[in-house]
Image (tube, rainbow, N blue to C red; front, side, top):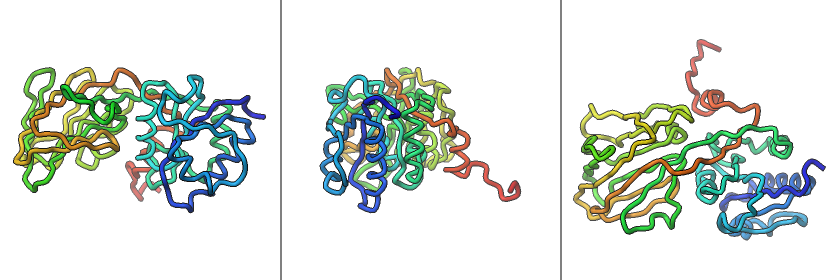
Length: 299
């Protein structure tokens, strides 16, 4: 027996049935290790009829349902599923890692063909914990995203219902930073600097560097460039638009808000504990997943 009734949380969303075989491998391995498995209830209801065998499974809906001594959470899916898992964990401190059933797998870094050795390493605690900062968004007199108003990747402001650009008035520590005439604005963490922000021309920022990056989306003025700021700064956003609505995105969640809504963005008051197995490294992930610095002359 590798573990003595460790409590393991599993999070996932509906996926193609071709991936059930990997779910079977995971649950069979956790059963052999005599773990107590806690599964996100909507996910369990989706797959339970496809799984063979009997398992010690309990279900949860939110972080308050999970035992306080949960060893770690496994996210099954792609990076989007991983972001949703982080929203569930919030400030509970439960470490999290992901088994990649998607495409890129930048955050969900465990390959689906390596489930058994990866689970063995996790149960033997052969891993490190990386603390990742989060970003928080608030609006006066409103509860945003059902209270799940923190993001591991980014907070994004986007135009809606019109082909015309919006003007995003951004104030940094109460001082006017810029009036961005653009399709929107991304405020990304170091973790999120390799996501949407990167595709819009933003820089890659090392996790733990204590920064955020503000990246405009298709700005009309070409001399407006991404800006790296301290994550100790506070950012206030006001929108000018021909439409009476704009979109606010918090990782994988999106809401439509009135144009007059003022947005307040800061660093979240807690970090997420991201599990990294011993063979993983940030730079190796950059090279493998993003082809960082790939040059055929070097191979």
